[in-house]
Length: 129
Image 1 (cartoon, rainbow, N blue to C red):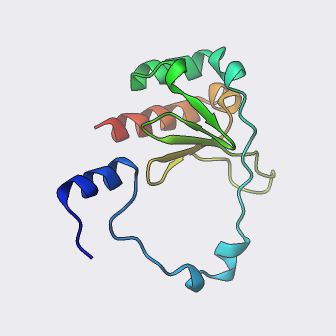
Image 2: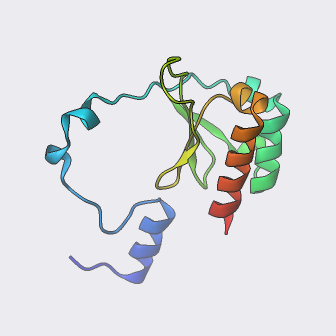
C-alpha cells in the first residue's frame, strides 16, 4: 500500500513507524509475562515539582499544554509514563524512550538520584535534536 507525503508526515508526527512488525503472535513467553505497572499521575502535584517544571521549560512547553490521559501524560511531543518501583532484587529503574514514549520512575525518585537526572537530561537532549 502506498501513501503520499502528507500521510507519511502525519504518521511520523504521531510516532507511528511506517514499517511495524506484525508478529504479535510470535512473542516469547517471557515477553508476555513481563507487565509494567504505571503510577497514577497527579498533574497538580507534578506542577509543584521543580524538576518537572524545569523539564517542561527545557522542552518549550507550559503546564497548560500537558494533559492527563489515564496512565500517562500527553505532552504533545511525546507521552510520559511513570513506572512503579521494582522489587529490591531487580535492577534499578531506568529511563527509556520508545517511539515517542518516555518511561521513567516517579519524579520524586528522579529528583533523589543524580544518575537518573543525568540520564533523563541526556535522553531529552538527544530526542530534541
